[in-house]
Image 1 (cartoon, rainbow, N blue to C red):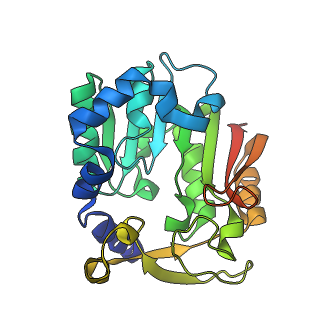
Image 2 (cartoon, rainbow, N blue to C red; image 1 turned 45 degrees about the vertical axis):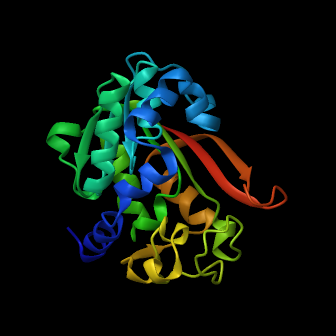
Length: 251
């Protein structure tokens, strides 16, 4: 693995399981909610799936399974790709409690085994802020193309590039020039939910944030046809852009 991947792994294995229990409930509690209303658990992302039954989904950086398990309840065949063993533990315990099966590939998605997963998936789906963990977006998109079947769909939902210049989502990450290509260190996602003394002990993540043109051009240059692009308001201020969703088909 590359050095920054290992760095991010250390950060995401620091108290992540305990954090999910604290914010989402014990796996059995979370599983009950996912089974009762799986489409509600998917939130806005449900609109981007034409169907679920039998659809093979790669959930990229799928974390604790908060979207993978509802998809599995709805009938999808889901494999999470994520780097954190803490995330894997929570996701697998929740899936078992929900009575569904999910796959979980622990490791660097950039090093995915193409002999096993090449052209294996109908959908590559990601949400919740993924792209900034990868320093080479073209390499990342090439992997997404590689794991998708011909005609497969990329559903890429992420933080809006506007958040480079303003902390519109209150993630407490540094702002910068919109056109900055700098790699920088900052707190991992859930550190801000802890007291200041605890926050100081969390390992830092290594980030690279992209402009809108970098994201769209990378999707297009890797052989995808863009079919939809939506911008979503910030959950902190509906007047500001907070997230986006790009849907594209592998040509």
